[in-house]
Length: 534
Image (cartoon, rainbow, N blue to C red):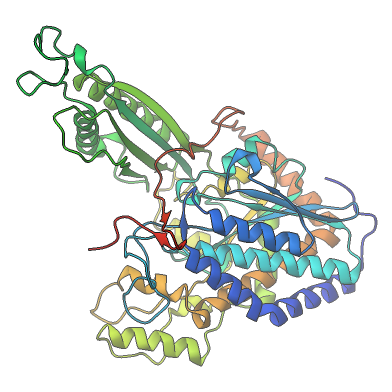
């Protein structure tokens, strides 16, 4: 940790926080417009071309030095701004969207104008994640300039969080080296993690791997076949099973074995996705290539390794059965997170100063219109009460632990966990708009939260609260060296108690070249998604 030139008085810290909060207030119209722009772009993992370009241009306009395609990742970036020797603080943007969740910022289910319902949309929403942290970053910079506070601000663009793709790479490439503290934010996604910071139970491990089946020697399936035909897959001869058969064997065997991979208790999950390659000709030739991605979330690394062993074994047998060659490609492989109580307490103190988001009359009217269109009686107070309330990290931890096994240290997954192994890190949540369930009506359709994440009146309170909270926390860390010293001491102790080396080699590169969901542009430059719709 670098030493600050001087220790400003507590009064200066308070004045700097007030300056930062005022900056957020004055710039909310701009921040709202920026958010809506990223929300409308809604580009999926590893294909966030326009979103990343927007951040790069914006940060350069704000005086940051920016490296594009940081870590060799086409849609990543790394930005830095410095005002003399002092602490180095980092936060980051995410901006990837989810395929198949295209939703307009309106009051009924409908895709965004001109797009298929199968186009991506922001579900979490990462659009608000990025603009919220950008608000905190720029507010901190402004306060540092006004009050002459020394230090360095770093800001990374982290693409492909939905496949947890970038942070492990940035970490391996040294982009988090020399950082004194990291603030990680996410819009709340499940109770009790709403308007709070994580305490002990951090996110767990996440593994993601692609299995590729290649049938590149179909002619050797039956050597005596086709004596009178140069075509290995003659219609009158036995044909090699091919890659599709291997994929289906892998898919069905892994599904059948899923219950046997790990106990049903413990919060683990296994997801799969089949890649498409435009080979839909239905010729008599065997399918040459087929790919399936598996992603699994586990509370412990031992569990994650057990699932890996089962999947690898299934893939090897499926390939042999279908006369295929097997290739494997890692997408992500990360470690469970490390907690830092010092930073959690510091950030929550700033969240208390700012207060939870509050939804005004226009937000309430938008929520009531959605309820009305769903055939529900509009509520006077349609938002979840927890969205406008704070809960301390300790109380949130206690509520969370009621649903977990006593032995379970980690729960759910997010690739911020890789950051926690390089520097003291705090993970916190601010409410995104969520509606109160109507009695007897069950859960709302998924499109409702997606729409609320794009309506300015409902999502802007998240951006405002988060920006002010991050700025306040950064300014504490910049002006209170004893806080950083305590955070670093705790970090070093936890590393010594439980060493956990990186799980991928230093030269690992994410497979950005795979057939991730993508879009084309027509002659006018308009984006075209496939399928276009039903």
